[in-house]
Amino acid sequence: MIRQTEFANKKIVVLGAGISGISVARILQQLGASVVVSDAKPIEQFEQDFTELQASGVGLALGNQNEELLEGIDYLVVSPGISIYIPLVSAARKRGISVISEVEVAYRLSEAPMIAITGTNGKTTTTTMVGEMLKTTGRQIGVGGNIGAALSEQALEVKSDGFVVAEISSFQLEGVTRFRPRIAVILNLTPDHLDRHRTMEVYQQMKEQVFSRQQASDYLVLNYDDIAVRGMAKRASGKVVYFSRQQLLDEGIYVENGKIRLNLDGKKTDICAVNDIKIKGGHNVENALAACAVAYIVGVRPDAITEVLKTFSGVEHRMEPVAEIAGVEYYNDSKATNPESSIKALEAFEGRIILIAGGRDKNTDLTEFMKLAKERVDHMILLGEAKQRFVEAAAQQGVKNIHKVATFGEAVTLAHKLAQPPQVVVLSPACASYDMFNNYEERGKAFKNLVCRLG
Image 1: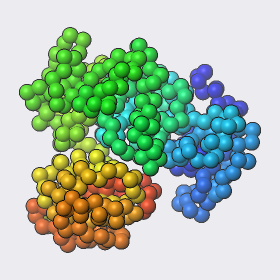
Image 2: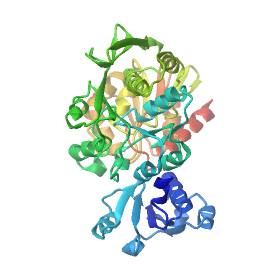
Image 3: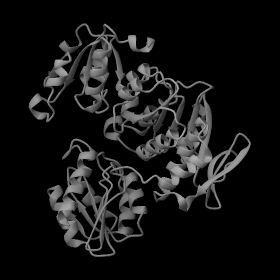
Image 4: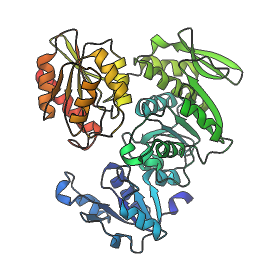
């Protein structure tokens, strides 16, 4: 329990009153710290009730954030949704205050080794799949991070002989200082969050934080097909394990003759046919290959890996079937918060798509997304802050039948009106949700509720 004493009797301010911020504040308070949660939003803009949190002894500083918050504190813990570029964080660093992320807190608290999975796309699916594979060993497995429960909660619950499997975003990696996962995975790297990171170079640097403190006894799983990710091996201290959907590797996990093949430590093992994987799409083959690599390293039996791949049905808000109404299928892909992710959604269908897209614009390049949309989308329904830029980009690539709507409800109603079998309706926004919703989960649930009312 030595790790848990690090924060005892310390004064800590947690920035961000969301799920991870509240969770880490509660935990730090329980461990003997004096904690204040601060958020730029005033209390009347929050739906949750803070009474229980305050009763536990956690202080609240909502609304105006000024440097008085920093007086006498030891740590500033930054939630993923809070940029490290805000003035308060800069002021804290100038004062010599330790600025760390919730993920860093979780790492310092965890007695179990961590498996950290990052990349632009596929993190949630791969993390969940790895968790299912590892559970077959009978060990205690915690799954958290940028998915479901806050990572700090999982870190405290899992004993030393288990594993904590963490989905890690670039935002969470902005505030790590000691973070060293036993196994790190980087799935891919495409432009995303440039509204926050500003350049691809900075974005990649943040992603590489996931393995920058690893040592020779650790593992780094990399996508061989992504040139930027493959090149990270040059900066790796741990043992690199590649996976590839497109090439046969001398060593690694790859597809050969339609089968997933493990070729590691001088042994070749066929896991299953690609067609046996329950979740469809080429991107999910890549996710499965990465998960197989982690499972093998941990020691999961090949037959157990096979069983998970054949039965795992995916995660909520990622190409999630919602309903079939009058012969038209509806899919919730709210987790597609960038064009590359939405491209994967379009590729999963042969065409005849009624696409609902738009939201908070990340200012990423839309060229390839709109080129594919021209081929596969019958009607494009656009909304949100990004609406006009998406309209212009779509028109430039020759996309037909572009519709603009003001509300989410209008988008679903119009899609229903337009769709005829064998068309499919797909919500795949290619944008963040923050202009209309608190997160992509809330957006996805709103879509599902609206669709269910159509029936």
